[in-house]
Image (cartoon, rainbow, N blue to C red; front, side, top):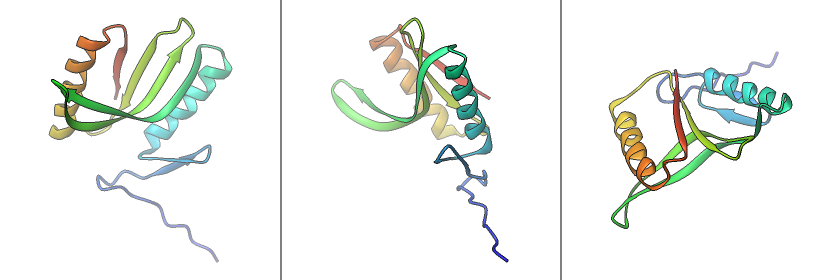
Length: 115
């Protein structure tokens, strides 16, 4: 008999595989599945996962932020989506920094947190 061990991350979320990729939680994998359905329904043009964003202030690199999803809408607008179950202080800080920098540099980009 073969047993499969569930994969847990450091916050005890159960990792979930969907479409050949591992996601940090079942919620995140479910959101990816929903995005695929939205592409098929032609509600959105495309999406990408785990996008690295370099956060810089005055030309100095502060940190990297990995946003869960980048969505390209049919009208050409871009939306970054963070899927969150547990909000920790470090995440809140990085998200606020991300919002401050990107709202200043690229106000046309939409930033969304899905809970």
